[in-house]
Length: 143
Image (tube, rainbow, N blue to C red):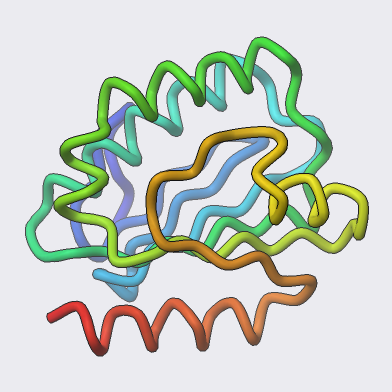
């Protein structure tokens, strides 16, 4: 099942050349970044994320950057704006977010909250498998 331009339904897969947004295991949601994510794709994926959080119960996100590159300053700004606009929804609907970041320096920055003021439960991992387990554990206690 394919999702529409900027909305998603449970059980769907939304993709662009640089971002995939997978709700096939909803309420577990997996976002993967590929290569240098364009600002256009990044902005669109934020709208899809808003859509996913409005589907129903709490969700857990796994953001896998294993195959992605660093975001542009503009993308970081878009993320900050989105976090402010969606703050109430995030607080109500996000059980937790697991960041998969294989690069130690980037993990340090995110873990230290030097990049963004993260207002939700999160954890930073260097591999996908432990991030997936953490997200599933968050869902099991969020219901």
